[in-house]
Image 1 (cartoon, helix red, strand yellow):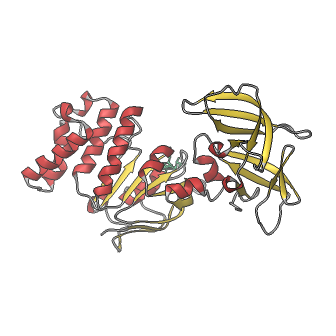
Image 2 (cartoon, rainbow, N blue to C red; image 1 turned 135 degrees about the vertical axis):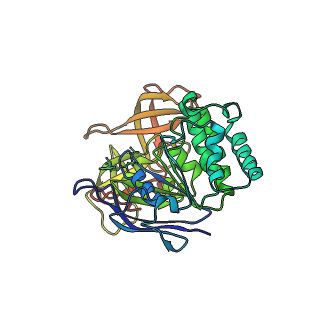
Image 3 (cartoon, rainbow, N blue to C red; image 1 turned 60 degrees about the vertical axis):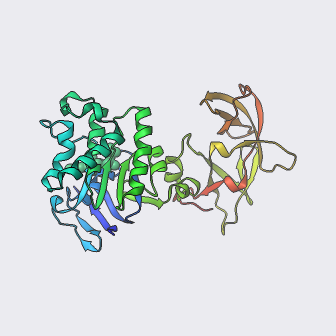
Length: 358
Ligand SMILES: Nc1ncnc2c1ncn2[C@@H]1O[C@H](COP(=O)(O)OP(=O)(O)OP(=O)(O)O)[C@@H](O)[C@H]1O
């Protein structure tokens, strides 16, 4: 029943360092919000202000209707997992997991039950009697996640909790986290710069850049309807093709080819065309429109697909490059190919502001 709300949150260190600018958002008790963005964009500072470890310069943190902006961290019932594990070095794993509950005078049987659940979930059984100094980085990180999970907190805050796990374990713990938090009735705020984590775990993603929220939406919407050039370029791997093109009449010129512009009030002299590599496809029928031709100059095998880089045919300007995900069942090296850019998959952006036009 505790909705978390940030109202116009700001943090200023000096006139030059303003890591968080006017961040407003809401996380319901059944929501998993991820703060995603490049290094230094203000993710951790935002999380630390929610936890009370940092005072906002301006703005409010509201939990369940109560203003908790200046409440001490210990008085907020929040569980936090840091990138740097923050485990008690003199305690065993078992003691690290149970000490918080003992302090809160939770009955012994319940402590045993809750600890047993996380131990099972995170595969910690073999490590219970070791101290943090005797664990690998990944194992310590799992214990830190476990310590947050044994508590029944009002809010869960996680700062890059999977960053030290190897790829396989990260995938497993990621799937576990998703299931665990689907059952918890508490807002979760998760910080990462790993877009796969953000896309798979979250019900909502806030993309941050330079302290500002660029877009706040469910992951599918972020991926399929990026609000601006920053989001379009940041989310998606391989990256979206983003091409600056001159406009002529109601078309944009992609090398020798005309791509019809969408219905926009005024046609600019230049525009940015965005299309994801998986949406660029081979010509399959005579009815195909928006066809471009070019020559392959690079093929990268990604396993399931080839990422093929193509120089688009152009008689005057230097060749533009477009990348397409194509099947692996044939050789694309140095091939002349014809491709289709389906109009429904094209995103158009304003050159100056970077905002989406259509
Ligand atoms: N105590 C501080 N004093 C001055 N500047 C700080 C302080 N803490 C953070 N910063 C600056 O604020 C900006 C945002 O930092 P923050 O840690 O929130 O970024 P982040 O998005 O979490 O980055 P990362 O992904 O690298 O952890 C950075 O430019 C950082 O150098």
